[in-house]
Length: 573
Image (cartoon, rainbow, N blue to C red):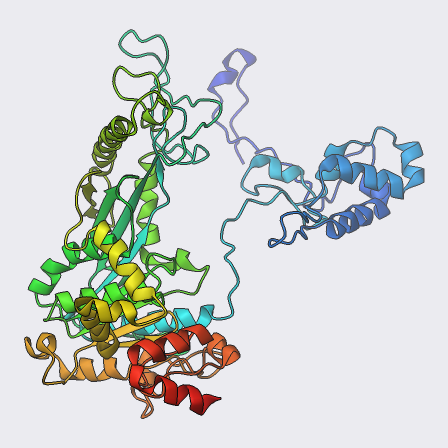
């Protein structure tokens, strides 16, 4: 105890003796000596809390996400909660007509427990205003199977890191060109610093100010397409999962390159343009000794491995590199494309365009070329090409400064009048009707296209949502004989690439377990729910083609095996 005499009042400011800290009162903790005063509402009317909780539970979110017209019940407001409590308790309505919505709000959980105001919430009811979540994906019965198969492809490359690479490809949602609309969504949060005071004599501060409404011009959209390159870890790393099963460490975090190809409305994006981009990115990798390439693509129309025209161009990609031993194209389940690795790379690119406008008028004009109806079509088209090319240059300047996982994004531009190499847009539209026709007349009339079509049929194993190209051992195949096989073991696994097989506790077997199975690669997709429900089977002639529909079965038999088409059709009747 401090035995020093107290200081006189005039010198009290010199007192350095320790002072007793004032105890804070917390409503959430039981107080041994509660303060006197008017009792709380919930102590007088305990049934009011039960009524409020029942009201919240009965009006929880029950909207059907597949039926926009049926909105269901989507929570309650604090005013609705107050009215519900008073309507269910007539005595409380008479005695407490001024019962406030704020009081009922305090019965629930605190919106943020880290704030000081959280101490005024009782937490009787397990409810609060929740944060918005954007993680709901379209349900699909095959999502587990597709994800396991993508993992197989990634672990396959991880097993042979010195000769393997993984690329992830997809398009980004369009970047808008318009003087009255932002390049990306106006609701994205601004994460960069801006001055809040006028600078250099300007009348206003330099903070972003948006036009109150977006007025986009139809078709004025730039389309970026990306290729993300991932390198497996060398040497291969085996790790144990939570069930103590061995897996290869995936290369998804070892990004070694990001390339973005920007195109305007005058340069359509098709599988042909995507293959041109991929060839441009993959060529240096092949020159460095890559012999196994796995591609994780989107399941949309441009990349879908089961579309006939896409299969044809994937065959062209495989034929373009005689050194390539294995080419795998796979994807996640429909509606699950957000799991594709390149989707993460679009985030920093999108954020770099927040609050950016790309003008839709050229210098000296007051209207966009689309709205200058007095001009001849040829002149209007020329002006639009100039406008889009200028916007592409501006977009490149914004994205040249962006990095992803320590890699500078390589931005490349395809201008409006630039011809795609090696497969132009005109050539694509000429080949597509020949390849996708139900009859073989077009193939007979175009022997060069027919030769490429048969090359794809001979070298590809097609499964639902997956393509596997491998070198053949035919002596008359010029492409495969031009370069020796780099790794015979990797080629043998690819020729009998395993399909996910159910294991223990609802899991599929790991890639290590599947490749150690004697029946590795037998009867592809036999455990896929879609394959089981449709019951279409696979081709019994080549045994490398899994059917997706009855029309697909007839077309494959007619075009890939024409001599046997009638015999097989009669046998199946």
